[in-house]
Amino acid sequence: MKAKELILLALAPVLVCCTGRQGSAESETESSWATTSLNIKTPIAPDDTLCYQIKIELDTLSADNSLARNLSSAICENLLPERNETSVGSAMTALGDSLETEWKEIIADMYDPESDFNDMFQYHFAVSGKPLDNGRDDILSYKMTTDCYLGGAHGSYMVNYYNFDMNTGKLLDIKDIVPADKEMLVLMAMEEQLCKDFDATDLPDLQSKTGITALGDLYLTNNFCFKGDSIQFLFNQYEIAPYAAGLIKVTLLCP
Image (tube, rainbow, N blue to C red; front, side, top):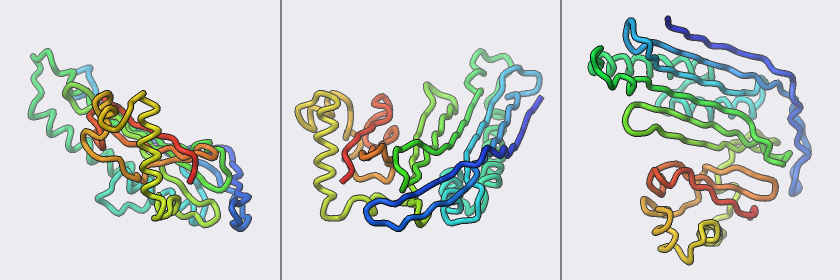
C-alpha cells in the first residue's frame, strides 16, 4: 500500500528579533514557523514487502517579507537547483515525483523476484531543514541535511547551511563576512586549526592522516554557519577529501 502525504503544520508563533550589531539599524520581524512534510513509501514491486521511501520535512517562515521569501528561495534551490520552483510545497512535490519516476524505471529493469539482493532497492531519500540556535540575534542560520541510499556499498549524507541578515533578509555570501584582503589569512587559519584538530604537523601530514585536501584545496566555502562569535565552515563528502573522511568542519573566531 502506497502512502503519500504533503502536510503543512502551523507551529506556535516565534518572535524573530534583531537588535542589530556593529552599528546596524534595529528591527524585528514577527513570523510563524511552519513545517511542511512529504512522505512517500512504496513497495519496490507488487507483492513485495520491501519499500523505497522519500521523506522531506522542512521548517519555513510563513510571512510576507524578504527574509521569508529568501529562505523559501534557498530551500527550493537546494531541492531542485535545475528548476525555478516558487514555493517549498511545489518543490517538494516535484522532487518526490521526479525521484519516484526515476526509481520505478530502474527497479523495473533490475528487479528479480528470485534474487537475494532486492534489499538494494530499498532506496531512501530524506531531507530535513530547520533554523539553528546560533547565539546571535542579527543573523538567522538555517540547516538542511540530505541522507540518501541509492543502492551500492553505502549511502551519502550532506549538510548545507544558509545564513540570512535579519535586518534585510539577504542571503549572506562568505564574501559578505570575509573581506577580500582577509581571505588568505582566513585560509591560513583554517589550515592551522585543522592541523590542530587532527594533531598534524602541517598540511601534507594532515592529508596523510585524514585525506583532507586529497581531492581539492581548502577554500572559503559558502557552506558556513555562526556559533556565537565563531564561524564554522563545513565541507561535504568528496569536496576536498574521500568519503571515509566524512564531513569536515573547521571552526574559527569570526573575522
